[in-house]
Length: 358
Ligand SMILES: *Cc1c(COP(=O)(O)O)cnc(C)c1O
Image (cartoon, rainbow, N blue to C red; front, side, top):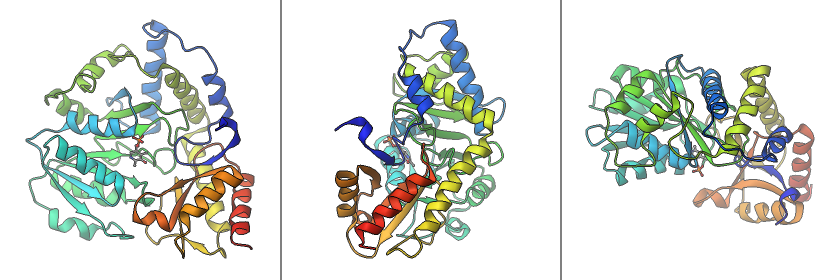
């Protein structure tokens, strides 16, 4: 497998930007230095700014994939005395359920059927019950459904719940306002909307979640947030971080901040709308529920998704996201984050047409 041969329409790793590849090509420096501390404090300031988090929120930099950060967040923020509501509309929601079961954290599941849209009505049966927190993957990447944060925020406000949002695929693809939506923990990862190499995840905590973390005991050495919070006061992490990715992150955050986060969101949205309008008239369709701009979960009439995925990969060196499970026979996903142009989408559309003999 030659690395340069593929065009990636995948949600992560994404088609990385040239400027990130330039940062990646440098020597990875030693990190217990005031200079690296300054870079990390700058990363914390910028990530909070781009997530519209409150001034006094805190960021935890974990060297782990997104699932590691999901697990770490759950075990640091909650314990056996909590009771969580989990919105589960696909494999990523299921992951939160598994994490709670493994760690014996009581939970109930709001489970959505195939192609079912999350609405305010779903929450009425859970009102007034003794929940302490809610977990949601705001873009359930398995289906591409973007849940309505207003409905979720209102439910959490009414019932005084701590709100944990896995925004791993949604951040920098859809608008994200942490403080305005009363979000207490936000989880993101380097390889998705940030378009960096995998390896780094960031959990941003609201002041009331910092307080909860400080009063929750954790059975873990590597994932103990209290240690990260103390170290981060001086811009350090307890263990060796993915140092190179921290440099890629700083470069990316500065570029996004300088252009304005709305500019980045518009670029992704424009690519998304361009693709979705270009597939009209092809023998593929999109589901009816609200979609994230991160990815288009296209569906085929027949069970040809695996074959089509292999055709693109092997014969055209184009990578899209396959879908696991039952849905995977009739669905693939096309990402809109990454260094992709309209011309790249034109090529992809042309390949879809040629595959269907159009
Ligand atoms: C990608 C993703 C994750 C994390 O997956 P990893 O493979 O562990 O990085 C978690 N949640 C969502 C919604 C995702 O899209």
